[in-house]
Image (cartoon, rainbow, N blue to C red; front, side, top):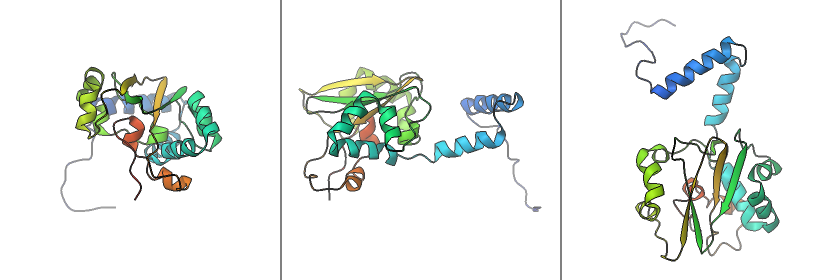
Length: 204
């Protein structure tokens, strides 16, 4: 469709370096016949459509079903498939349970490895150098900045995601939720609580 107003051409001039590399890789895959452009586009669309709701379903099920929680802790990929969720391409997905004595916190010190298939795209702060460095060197202080203050006797375990291993935190179930159905429990589970920088929401 034609139009008669002036504007700058639509180009990739100011895109991040990583995006340039991804486009170049995609072009090579298409050129060699490994993937078609439509397939690449479909995979990207699927990935960006993911939300934390899938991870929240796993957590809520674990809260109400001890046997499922054990299976989730043993093999989170298999547990996700069991309930019809796609855990994504990472070979290993590990679920870690927070308890009154132990709190887990996830970081990727090298880049931004993250269980996107279960939690959706990572937040900007997760990819920042400040979080990636300080989560390891001063985790308790970082949690305080997120508004989460833990008792001094709670052990904080920081786990480092990699290209091969992704982590999902099972936060502690909030008090006062004994009568809630699984769907209502899932609504209390936030993305940040599954990264380990927040607690789940309190019931209304």
